[in-house]
Image (cartoon, rainbow, N blue to C red; front, side, top):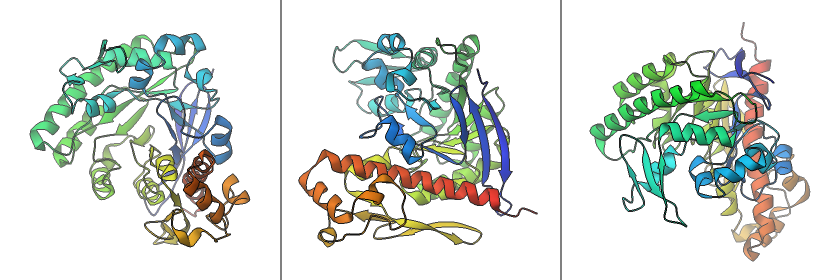
Length: 386
């Protein structure tokens, strides 16, 4: 079976954008690559066929925290792993559960974090589940994703420097424990090689980000992720953090910004900073709530901008102006939705609360994110870098 590897295929001379080829046991990925998110073992309102037709090369499938609570790791293992459970044939990344533990810990009655890990109550049974670095890696082995994440503590933006230092130091200790556990079992129970990524924390503090980047990049990892509550949430700060640490990121390893992808422009901005992969729940969430990506890629200062209608390239389909608008969401879009349906029809379905609306809207938004990546990739390939 294919061993995990990353090859830089082409660099762009006007910024740090690049194309890489990532080889996994379930196929190859050409970056830049957006990962649709299937937190609960499904990308909302989309089938695997929908995802492939929209251009998905890799997904984030089966969040570790949620898989522990339902359906449970025993069911996933009996199914032969998450790929078979979801009927997804291509590469998959899963997360460590660290972000969910961070979110739940805001309510101390539900979850507590200490030096050993996160301790939370099962939402149905009330059983206390201990999610430690070793337990997270063991769970991700059973999930069977091609790329798994070291257990970390997400750094909140509130709390100041003391909180950021504590989260970073804990993340570093947990990373060493994750590496130790992974080194004993680098393959899933189904015989596939897995790759382990470490996560750079440090919040919005320049010196802490440098310290964390230096710590993480010195370890024997297959990829480097940049995490923390600010990443993806505040794109101006995200760009600043990347500018601080970019020179420390190894050329031959995958670079992954966690939670980036609220808008198509966000992908363009981080790719210019040398990022290869990104994930976000926003494209499908936006779609369900009536915000459809509507715009086009335009060359600007040797790179791109996503220019479009209404607010930051999003069309709000609930507006009455679309009731008799018989154009597709984007005139030249090749997604199934735009090839077959109009704004007027989508407006009607949305107002009716139809499940068909969510399906068609999610197809469109995911397609747009992939189209943005494809456009950047093809441009880098064709650019004269002499």
